[in-house]
Length: 342
Image (cartoon, rainbow, N blue to C red):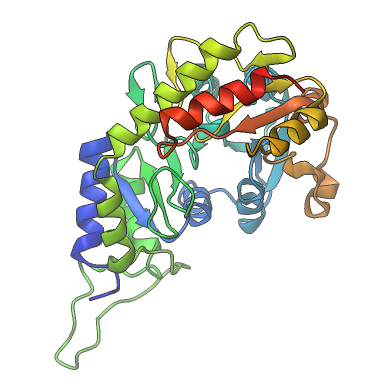
């Protein structure tokens, strides 16, 4: 069986037991997870959803999929994460949900965001596409909010080739997400008749968003050693922070003791960015400026507002390699290459 089956359930169970996620529903992409979360949350036409521009375009498109209005808010220059104070300013009577994005795996201030949401009767849908393994106040991302969306796309911490998961805090939402991921058919109740066809009756629009057994098998294999690989990223990041903390021309992103980053990338602010990129390129060290804000795309033209901090952030942010396959020698070379100057 290559379609959804026992391996998908086994994969979901291990995501819960190994990573501490609540009610994970395995899906075919992180984008599907975002869309399904909005559907299950009841977000639709006439509603507003607060999101940062500093994210991948899927976050904004998912809001458009359900006919809602994306309301862009500014970010913190020191972290790249959504600015809670600006969220508070943008809440209206039409606001239905908030989608905080954990920039490069560093958790947003989820305590403040969830308190604000509770006060205003809003749904919180975490975009944790890059935050597998991250924690907030010693609790895993995937256990904090109404919904949390993960990605298992090819370059993520854990891959199923392509795929994702939606964590649902309530049992009711979990059950609904399981049904809607497969056309709205309740697989547990839709048993085959004597004719061989499942007996079911669909009363709402469902989707073909389920993960298949083939992908789940790859995910199960990739779960082996995941904590060791995450620890390796943290070790590399710690070395970078020590070496670059007082280096002229570099300003490290801020981190506080309550949060542990997943370090999807290791980023910071740099002076004379193009000179930095060129110097590192000549030394064989790749760099990237990742996502310059989705509000700039024409598809969001009518929703675009001024986001001065976000604009400033994207004038100076840069990322260097930070993954578990890096050897100690390669890490030393990267550090030495940067310390040579630019």
